Amino acid sequence: MRTVSEGKSGTSGLGAYSKMALVAWTILIGGLFTWGVTENYQDTQSLASNMARAYLDKDHAFRLWGASHGGVYVLITDKTTPSPFLSHVPERDIETQSGRKLTLMTPAHMLRQLQEDFFAKSGVKGRITSIKHFRPEAAPDDWEQKALREFEKGIPEVSEITAEGAGSYLRLMKPLKSEKGCLKCHAEQGHKEGDVAGGVGISLPLKDILAKQSARTRLLLLSYS
Image (cartoon, rainbow, N blue to C red):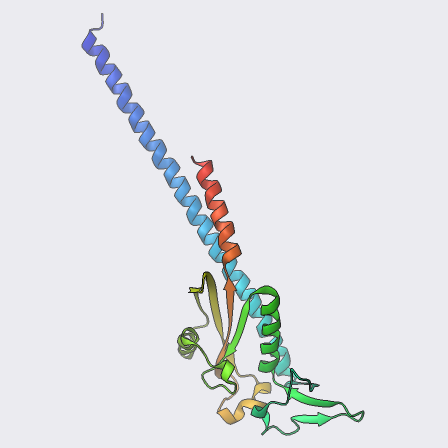
């Protein structure tokens, strides 16, 4: 026959076991939630980086195309006027037999106009910059100057999430190397083929991407609640 003390002991043992099981379950759920949040964060970072690199590769391909042709002649308009920085280039301005007036546009200038138009449509800001620059608008900001110094050390890419105004942006920049076609306009700056002439960068707004990350985090929280 069991005594009262034996019954209390059994009940106490069962209670301790239940508490241990509850603690183990809580640790398991907490661990799974933490793992899910970490995976969500890493996926978001990977998505943003891949998007920025894709935009940057597009800019790089466009510039290479322009450099391979030594620049492109375009109609002189209010938006595109003869560049005073190319006054030393022979045949900067030409006129066709039909009287159409054309001016030489450098690959960098072509890319800059493309980036401006793309920014107006998408909010993704592209920049081409250099420490040795012709145009004042191509002067690097503090972040870009640091990136350009890294390129001189052989670093192939620089990226960082920065706060600008009320939003967060992924800034990513890669070195811009002098191609043979670039020397037509930039040789007088001392550039040689293969030199790091500057950098091409992207500033990707993260508002929509971070909103999706937050939504997935809330879903995880509900799943493990």
